[in-house]
Length: 67
Image (cartoon, rainbow, N blue to C red; front, side, top):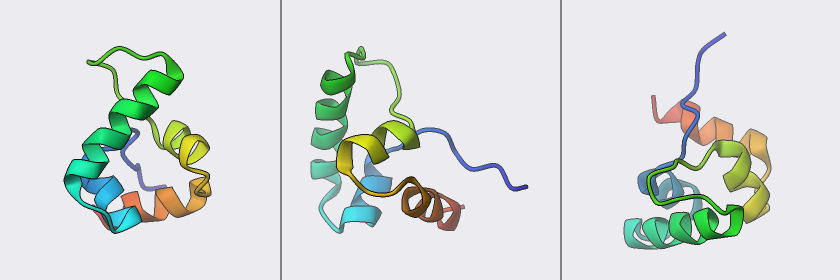
């Protein structure tokens, strides 16, 4: 089994949504607020999928293709 990154970065959000990297940074901050996380904490693929409504399998596929 191949290991996939556990955290989401703005570039990942850009690739998944087709929006800008700046939008990805903004969205990550909104997700951190939603889940009550601090600025230094990471967002996982599960949290991104839950917040965005995108299926986890699709998010994982994008993360795998970035390797």
